[in-house]
Image (cartoon, rainbow, N blue to C red; front, side, top):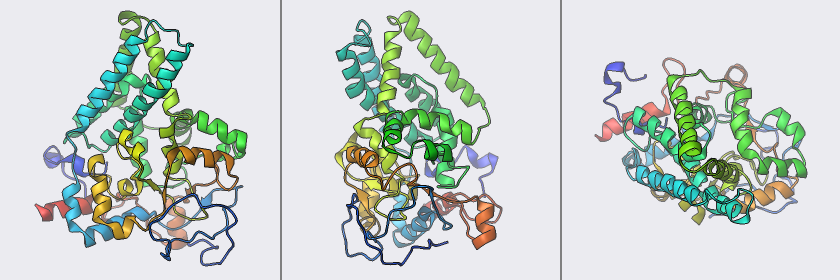
Amino acid sequence: MAPSKSSREELDFSLFGGAESLSEGRKQQRTYPRRTVIVDENDSFNVYDANPIDPSDFLWIMTEEPHRSRRKAIMKAHPEVTKLMGYEPRTKYVVAFVVLLQFTTAFLLRHKSPLSIPFILTAYIIGGTANHNLFLAIHEITHNLAFKGIKPNKAFAIFANLPIGIPYAVTFKGYHLEHHKYLGEDGVDTDLPTRLELYCLNNVLGKVFFCTFQILFYALRPGFVRSQRFSHWHFINIVSQLVFNYALITQAGGNRMLIYFIMSSFWAGSLHPLAGHFIAEHYVWDGLEQETYSYYGWLNIFAYNVGYHNEHHDFPSIPWTRLPTLRALAPEVYDTIPSHPSWPMITVNFIRDKNVGIFARVKRPSRNVREAALKVELDGGCADEEGKTSSTEEENQAIKRRK
């Protein structure tokens, strides 16, 4: 049950994480190289010898997403996990530093031609890395993990949005929380490619185009799949960004600073080493029906540990600084789940390998269809019907017991 309005402002909102397939069990010969890694290759859970999925359609399944049940199991085995939940005060300092870095870099380039090699390389190396960091800062803030209250987090996300050049922070929050609550659900989870993308981009050139312009797909797709109700926060986000952009053009040395910000955002979501995480997180690999993958490499330093993606989906209320601790707390869980060894190679393999592509995503029919067919409950960690217990309520109850 949702908290009452009278107690709402007293709550720590950073504690709120904001059919079996026909081929299963059949022994089949694997004819393509493994691209994922696992600590224990003898674990029976991990089957690498299944055939690739059908490239003419997505991988449709009727089972619920795995994160809610795994969250419950981990909380039962390790009740101390609740101590990891809550906002991270250091986030605001990292964000402020990156925003200052971007503004300073743009100011120093204000007399350079946007077509010059120094301008383009700086926008790719420094700007692309910094703005990708801000993308993921907004992701962290979306889960109310920079401050205790909701309003400070929303306002700070709008601040982090400024060097990106295009207002999207408030819109992202609505879609991203649906991605957590309805992971893989067709028509709701806008992280999923559309059938039009499947038809048009299901080849090498199509995948090159997708990887180069994937930031545009993530920006434009939600509006075609599922519209949002416009709120005053959307208005504040848009107006703040427009005022900031206008000030850059009129007061800070012309329009080249704004061009630098937008070019940085393009590179951040294009063929950039960090952008591999967009594909790494939820695409299907190695014939497995696993829909979420983690990456534990050093690039997490620039990405708020978003590579710990299974851990993040299991516990959205645990901030980036404590996700490695979560993994160490439950090695019997996370060390047995296949993970990716490299983000840059994800992009390379995605483009060149015919066994993975736009089609390699797990999709679920709508909830009504699944319930009618198999009586499967899928709430993605948030109850939508009266009487059901949501994951956030489970976490909150555990926190109250701890207190």
